[in-house]
Length: 50
Image 1 (tube, rainbow, N blue to C red):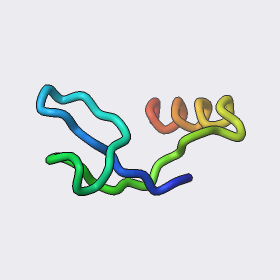
Image 2 (tube, rainbow, N blue to C red; image 1 turned 180 degrees about the vertical axis):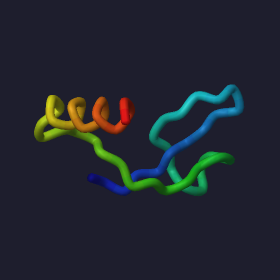
Image 3 (cartoon, rainbow, N blue to C red; image 1 turned 120 degrees about the horizontal axis):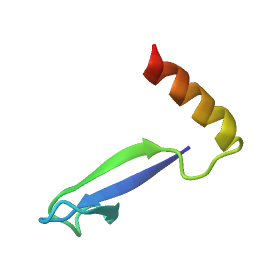
Image 4 (cartoon, rainbow, N blue to C red; image 1 turned 180 degrees about the horizontal axis):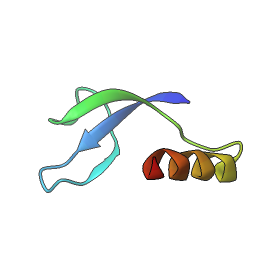
């Protein structure tokens, strides 16, 4: 998990940006890589089918 700056462009695209450099930019806490993607997918499916 990392804190990153998320940029949203005027046409709705998202990407990593710099606070103060982009008009629509905010800090978020997000997963940037996975230790066990299969376990995450299993958890996600279980939550969606409840």
